[in-house]
Image 1 (cartoon, rainbow, N blue to C red):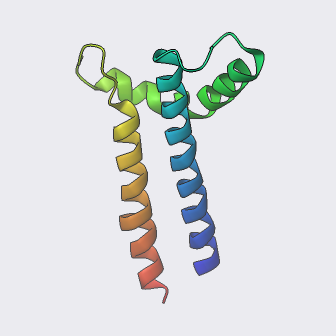
Image 2: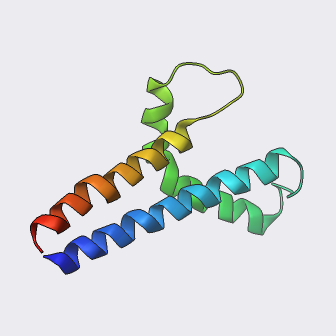
Length: 96
């Protein structure tokens, strides 16, 4: 059971890094550092968006309008940390 929990922890941590990569890429595109019309950048952006948007979209719908700032990725990262530390960590402690 501990191996399964370790694997789940690894998957959640990997997803955290994917969310961070999506946020950084979006910021680079917004500031004009990276050209969004380049095929490689577009394919990376679409791939990251396909993985992160299904969880970010419901968070965006429930959050209040903050103008041009999007805090949904921060909320998603906090949820991932909660899952890793409280849920997976608590279950791992019970099986030790």
